Image (cartoon, rainbow, N blue to C red; front, top):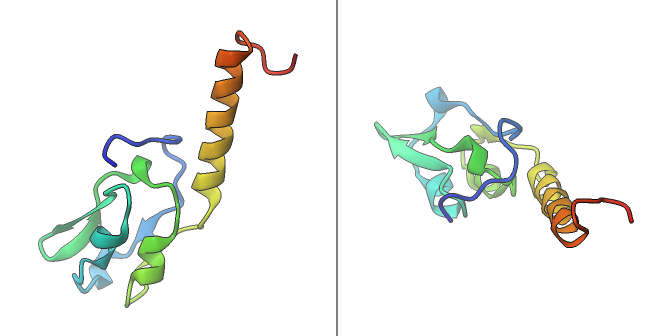
Length: 95
């Protein structure tokens, strides 16, 4: 799902690239193509597309990926909800 965005510069995603074994599982399980395999190691190529679902960290066999699961999902849902209120409510949030 290329082009997907929630909030910029807030993802808690971190990668210890030096200790990556290049299995590429993160590139396979990430629904938003946040990772790429470069020089036989994972690299974060689109951090702002991360919705912090945690699939990458849960599937990393050497635990070099960390992320606070759920934070991005919740922020994104709240952000979308608030944007919907602005559109439907004529720019007002409450009433």
